[in-house]
Length: 117
Image (cartoon, rainbow, N blue to C red; front, side, top):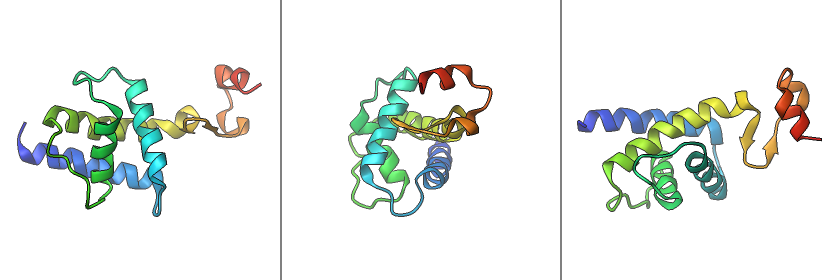
């Protein structure tokens, strides 16, 4: 992979994550999001939550995140799946693990309606 391709993925993740978390986010919400990414997709690199979270926090612009020990493949996955999860989270009705949209926002989703009862 060329460096500019990784930079494009990172910038895409930055935009998606900033849109998802907003300003002044709680770092625990990034951890929960990283857990969701790891649980939602079988990541080929076998990335752990700490690696995913570090990549996401770096993409969000946190200056003290060290990515030196993380493989490029893991960074690519973290950035790509950050965009995928942030883009699908509201449509699926899940904002973060344990937080659901009201049923009226999820009309037509039978499985979501029955799971909230």
